[in-house]
Length: 630
Image (cartoon, rainbow, N blue to C red):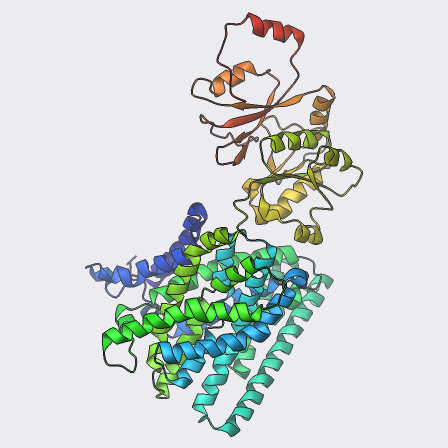
């Protein structure tokens, strides 16, 4: 099959996008920046290779997709915004609600005004084009905020403010662009402003009602069995696309309002299968974000970028104006917008300064700008041709500036909570309390969760952190930040419940980060859905019997002279190896199918029976051996 086959190009887009996200996960680098780099590599950079098959670039979206490119991007953005709306639960607004409201009500008009001034005086654009571009610049969006927040731990309030701002402001920015575009194309008279405003506000209201009706309808029909389980996910996807297209027919870009409102309504109404549908949408959203980012960054053309011109014929002055506009946007427009909007709010100053810096632009900004730029050029509007290269310049500058500096800035402001290093033990019993106490001595944060107040008393007496509640309850998960834990161990006396915990929280924490105690072999076979702890897979009854026999936890440091083989020889044959603590505070657990690699400097945590007097005498008669550091 030839490399210029469309099937090959679609495969390259998928591999490049998902591959960039995997590299970002492995390296801790911002995914949005790596996807942008990957798109440039398979797009304009590949065109520099002196081979016929790379002529014009390995991926050239306008050439490869033609008229399909715009609807593909718009539908992908619709699904991404809907998935973002599904994550907007009103319970998250207990801490962030007032701040989000201020950013929308005060920040959006102020950001629009300042962005318009920056585009006019900084980039030298006409007032009409500056106003349209200033409206688009109020967006951030889930396509860039979501991947960035995955690599940060800055607390729920900051994360919720940035997440809500990005999703709510996306349709608002699009509607502002619609308003300015209509004003420019209708002649710009004062009489038209009222008509245009009524038209835009009316169509937005209809789009919002449509989204609310679709969201309510789904949450009413699905739980009552009107749709079979195997059709719920595809039907929901079609409803999202259909609602978006219908609203877009009524008024351009109002479909973004429809899908956002639909997602918010569904997120705040009870519905069976909500977890399965949310997982499906999250997976689809990751694929769409990856693909659309590759496609948009592959459309970059060096000639288009370098052709950015201002009112000055001097190309040097044009570049300076372009740079000046980016500086104004990064260091003046965004900081002033947020600091003024959050003035006199309860948000601490260090969090305000962090939010004031973070504002990457992504798919929605480029897609909307490209759409209106083409239409304005057709209308002969002055400076409209500069919008596309300018929008890409903003996207590239903000993604790299904010993506690579976010963690450093959070650390400087004291809101970076560092890597997840805690352990969550579900089930308060003698074994989990003793194990938690040992981990605490190793400076590993431990939390024991149990719905029973009585069961948690012993943990409190040992001065361990506890959480009372059912860990599967959504309310419990909102009060307990699961992002702080590197490992969850389900160790209740109910095997099925342990497996259910691992199955439910595995997609959120990662299946390699959830474990359960072994199942009772005397009962009917049960398929374990979590990694089973320790090689011999002891049940909770086995471990409690060991507690009755006064088994103890030990910690042994491996050195060059005292290796894992020496430790095994020293330990009792019945001893159980539980985990390995790495120097970087990572815990690697032994399981029925995992054997951590042990290196000098590691600490091994074991669970062993107490040494008998006979064993002690035998040890005294043995030749002296180097003792491990403890």
